[in-house]
Length: 162
Ligand code: ADP
Image 1 (cartoon, protein in one colour):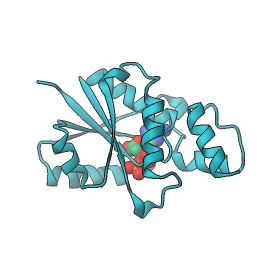
Image 2 (tube, helix red, strand yellow):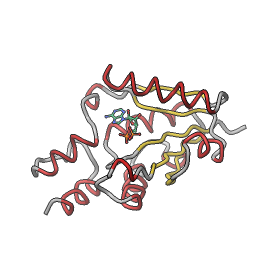
Image 3 (cartoon, protein in one colour):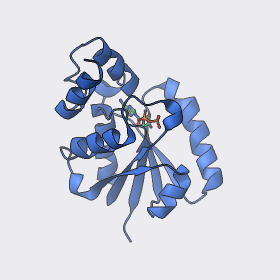
């Protein structure tokens, strides 16, 4: 039996923090599905297609990437997880500030799909303060973001803030 995990998020855009979590998940599971949520209600800066494309490019650089697949989804997360035959749902936990929302999400998802276990992974300290929101803010002010995202992501963000 293949032990497959799903790692969902908006990835607007994917950062080194996300990649750190994906790599850790690959260390625990046979396969990881990085699932990019459409999330139109969050008014993402990048289109769904752009986010999927950048996530696909960025994950090519991580250890075990041949066991990772990037997909897009626009359904209920637990339905997507079921369709992908995932046994676990991976989320990243940075600080206490993430905890309340993540706990709520995990408990609701357990209610909807009792078999699907949520697993929280902590990133390397350097990425604890990193978020897609901060990256977009830095890019808007034309700051150097090369320590936080891949070159393709940096280029894509530059084109959004000419
Ligand atoms: P969402 O809109 O679902 O929160 P995000 O793309 O912001 O999507 O985040 C997806 C997941 O990755 C979340 O579990 C989030 O906590 C985690 N994450 C985001 N940034 C980091 C980071 N720097 N280090 C570790 N986990 C992170």
